[in-house]
Image (cartoon, rainbow, N blue to C red):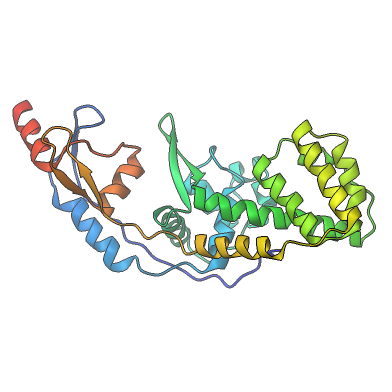
Length: 296
């Protein structure tokens, strides 16, 4: 299945207005001078953040995120989806992304809310490069994205072959993610069409040893007209459908390093910590309060 980037865009709102103040005593010790805020944020989150993004939106956001993984943050991702003509977007040719402008009718904040939902439901994550928060895939998000990227590459080959184009410079496939490339080759085998063989032969000439071996296997499968493993295809599709459900955020039960008691790390607290690039707290509220009192 190939995906085309024209969908009805729906909005999904999240509300995360946490008013709080912190004193830093090392990264592990964050003293709450006002504790109700993050817990209040958790109840707001759980009460109002209930809409599940449609599959089309999830796929669009993942496709746009693929352009900036590890090098751009939430705002840049939102601008790609909005179709911004900002200098940075154009400078890095992000307007060439198939998902560019797919949410152009939405407000930037609405798009940011969708991205935050993707983070909360385990499709995307935030990692810090120095002090800069960068978008990265979770395992779930990458499972979906590599599948649709493989479909996109196959669709591209189908178009070229339909136009009777000669094999392109296959260097564009070199140094791509190995998992995605092997999945692309699996989909070529599953298509069972010898029309791909000339492209495969050109590709085999320029890639690395392990990829060449997989390309050669694919060519041999097509030449031999080997039967298609429909059960493997069914299992992969079922796995993608399951991944698209996401993983709803939930409170975590952590163990205090100081007193040994268990304490709840709420959804609202998790969101705040992730947004700021903090590690999970190591002490319960009582131990943090006592530490705060001892210091002041």
